[in-house]
Length: 224
Image (cartoon, rainbow, N blue to C red; front, side, top):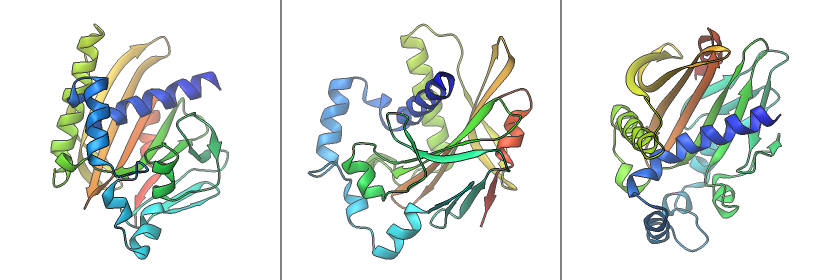
């Protein structure tokens, strides 16, 4: 359980790098967020969603399956696997909340966590609003920004190496992705992150696994 929580928090740190690290410091981050977010912490783009788009953007969570028709994706875990919504305290739930509620609760996005039998790893899906300066950026630009931010973090903490932008296949389609490969006691571990923007929002899909497990986790994602 501790390993799962640590991996989840690490995943969140990587995702928050996309929207935070380029600001340079905690103080500047807080100021930037206060300027871009209205009272209550809910981004303007979320408040202006139509009822129909809000339903599509929130998605549907059933046993072993999460479907998001706004982004046109579905993640399904095989029997024996787990798929839950989590919050920033790594508490799991099978109950879904709205994107607006997630910001009101200071979770700042919808987080979903999946594990499958026989694979030492996880898949994480995050639905959130883009920062104003990221609206209109391509998948490749978002991936490149993520890579640069993580290299900056690694340099700050004197960590060698980091991810690179590459092209990977997800749900039968080629996408730019951030890929990092490290060596651990368990063998080679791969981290891959995909960036799927649409309008003012983004769906981030993050995978981490040792050995050949990455491909097994990525096979859980399909286009609808």
